[in-house]
Length: 599
Ligand SMILES: Cc1cc2nc3c(=O)[nH]c(=O)nc-3n(C[C@H](O)[C@H](O)[C@H](O)COP(=O)(O)O)c2cc1C
Ligand code: SF4
Image (cartoon, rainbow, N blue to C red):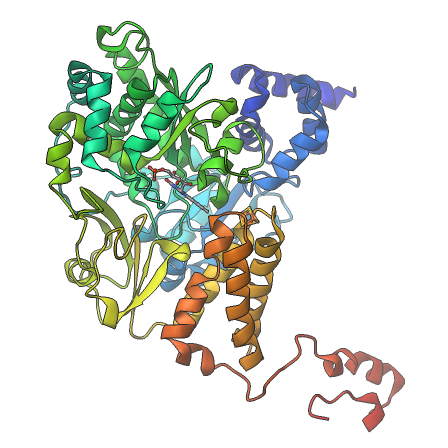
């Protein structure tokens, strides 16, 4: 081992110690290495592999999977611009270009002095206060050219990010409509006391009675999930809170984690009480790093109040504690089995199901995975009972739903409604100006037009995990769909061919159409690709990756057609242009030296 390696080894040893030398915490370890050294080098990987007794290929494939981990150095100040369509609508590209000029850097390239690097990243979950950026992982919202100038000055003067003005890092809740969850005070411990007073079985019966369905997208019945995990065979049981929230346009879990953490943690403890879990894991998306320290503090308070730890509320054997794990920039890790892989220190690739997490989850044991909002709702059921809860919403969609509203509205933010609310009501409340479309449930969701604004938010009509992006009549829906196509190409985990290749071809076709080279042939190809991905992809990402394009072709065809070339087909490769240099060298320009496409 060289002297430099010995020095590096000492630093790495400190990081490894912090994580109990647990190879299952590899993602957390690599995050710390990245933060300390600005990259995860081949040398660092070799040392980690040896000390964790892992094959180096495993460490490498984990590093290479996550976009926040890099093999090459990033700038001392790593600046990433959120690139959701809503950030674009708020002018993120002009601010990016301005900053790149002022810092003298190009996209993806570190400045010559190593000081700064600038790039785009997928939606950072700040759509109500964009354009947003991350600087060394910390979120900065409401970017303007003026703020960009201030940041450039701080970077040039090498002021540590921790000393930047506090107001840069302010993240507002923007709660615009509060209902039974957001509008009700909560005393920590009250829901747990109510559940313990009822007893395990009775509380589970109330959860089932409420008919509550998961808020993470799939809408699975929570009581059934909890019961299955409780009944499954295992040496240990786990409760996982899915706070990955990577769907473009959604940010309600961020607000719950920041302003209602007691509800989230108590919901986890309630699930643990029912299933008999001793450990809970919060999987917090890497983009929400700013929440980690306050959440850790909240956990300490709950331990001090004996609402976490051993014999909670004096119940013998009710021992439960919670750890926070950070994601590292991968949307797919919101899918519950990919999330579990990531929690185990691996690349976040979705598992083959069955078995489902309730019987074979974290470390092969029965595991409940629930969305942040679902867990908050569990506290309401403990406090008021299943029958009360069932009284809100619709028959198949009980209770309330929190929507993340952004785009062309006067009042972007969080809106809580009983299920069954009409799209038009939400648009009115948010102050939508001449809306022509709403993209529900993010890039993976559906696009609704004015004729559908009378429809209702509910599993039986328009299901949603919560994103509600509004587009006014001057917006170009082709560009909206193109932004989503690039998002899916970037976020595909690469495990299965229909999605890995399909998302790439799809984004390529959208670029070809944007450049004016698309024809009817490409339009047909997009429809065909959508079907292939929908039917043959391994997980929900690939299955939904063509939905927004199919919807916008069906409903806003003119936005595509105005770009199409007046031909049946135009090749992706322009042979004549490629031969131009050869003609120049040989001095020829006769008909035979040309491959004219019309010939
Ligand atoms: C590509 C993809 C991304 C997902 N992202 C999230 C997410 O960010 N948060 C979430 O709660 N569920 C997400 N899900 C759904 C989860 O797999 C899972 O159904 C959910 O966490 C279960 O919790 P619930 O029953 O409380 O809804 C995603 C699913 C897919 C296919
Ligand atoms: S569908 Fe896409 S994201 Fe899902 S497993 Fe296949 S490649 Fe990965």
